[in-house]
Length: 168
Image (cartoon, rainbow, N blue to C red; front, side, top):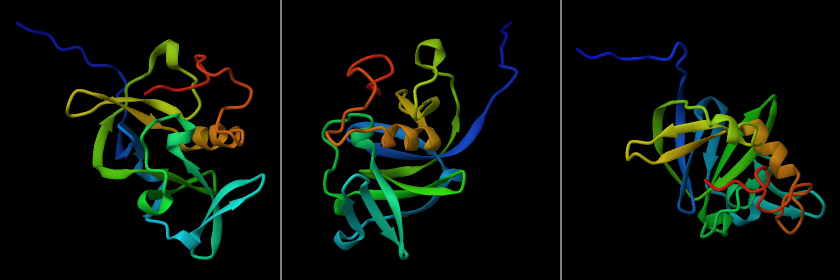
């Protein structure tokens, strides 16, 4: 005799698994508009506004996930990385990642009380190899990235505090 306990609610999403440095993240496919490898002339830096990516004549903010989440050994050259154009509440932005690993159906797991409320994270998922992949929240990443100072540290947050740096 054995018993199986199932949660009353189980959320499954289609997610795109991406790599930034040595870390893997999941981005909901419903948020993704397109993915492109930027050309040098498509990436510009505007003083006081950060980096912009030109896509079909439209300039959209470009956020490097390696800087947002303080990840080492990520691709610094935007032309060697992959820009994922995402949309949230009618606004588009581009997220720079190192590599697109593939699409999977992901069972969303809660991050628990300790990690709940961290901007940019919606939950976690157990990957096929047993490792945990963090599920990204596009709206939260946009807010988090906009709060970055020019030196890359998060304004208004202590470095290394629970709500400051996110260590995947």
